[in-house]
Image (cartoon, rainbow, N blue to C red):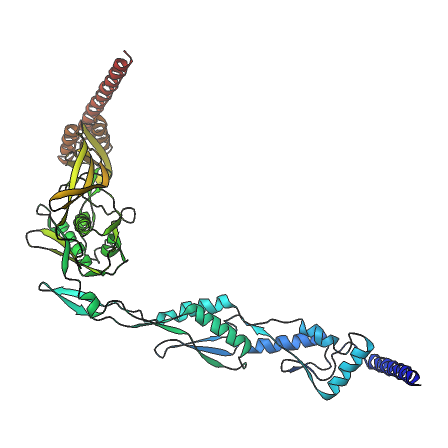
Length: 519
């Protein structure tokens, strides 16, 4: 009897559900979402899945104008919109799930789902997400400007004594922590209204307490060079460069770039036009003479035994230090860099004097034994005396201009560090090896002129390779000798003949050398 009743109930249930489906189809609701179904806060009852998707999209679009305000630092705020942060609807598959409720599964499952809806709404989650990359970009671009960098404690040196200057605590936004916090909050806790969020900040303590910097009192290395033969402009550049390095404090591990400290080489930064090396010539450029600053500092750094990480020699020899003891600066291509590899901070003092001397002193905490001494020796490996002379055309200068520069002897040299203990040599180490180009006496000769006869004459003089010939033609041009077309043509022809003869003599000499080499 019990088995019969069970079967009867099942038959009844099937009939009931079948009748419900027939009624639903007759009413045109089989393809619409059942009553009592929500996606988030949106009632999608009676909608098709397409209508439900449009309704949710419209709702998400309405959130794009919501304002998210970030509390940065020092009462500064930045306000953006949800659209700025790339808001979007993440779980669009819930539309299909809502549409299938009461229609998917077997008869019993569909029946149970429909009966449950009679007693309680079915709410599918609406998941909103944002673009982490956009959040990061906006925080970086708009909020980091309010960071307060920590300022390390430092020293000044006045009247031969150090004075401590306290540092300042810094407060900076932690970008990655802030991005994570904002992303997670908006995705899970946001109430979809305008909101204010505190960004994550971290405090950075300055280096250098008064006690830590009190140990900086010992002279670790000192070096002086003279620029007594320098003119006003070069002297000004040397003094200006020294002043920009003076007062530098380097903590253990800090790196120093001389170029970064003294650049840019502009009039606004205190520099003048003065002589500097370029392609075997001395030419005027802004900052000419700055290499004497880097060279003097280089030698002080060597004596303090700091770690040199980058150093270049000049293309030609300089006279204010021994060979291989120089350090050139040339834009970013050549720089003098070093690192404070000691356990204590070091302070760099740089100054010039009225008698045109530049000095760098490096102070720190002396830990080297008193009986240990160091010195540096320059050893010349080879010497090349230039032969002949060289003429270089300079189209930037007018015809009649000539600048003759003395020859430069070429050298190959090494710099050695010698350590003695109690006067006995303990070690000898090669620090660098430098090659300096041999350059003959050179004349830069101007060629710019609208006078064709003068142009022909000066170019012919340059072709002879004779500085004296170029001087003679330059003097004639300045005296107006080439202003008379007839006389100019005759003089130019003579100069061309001399140039041809010089070229033929040079070719004959080369051939004679070649013939001798084969015998």
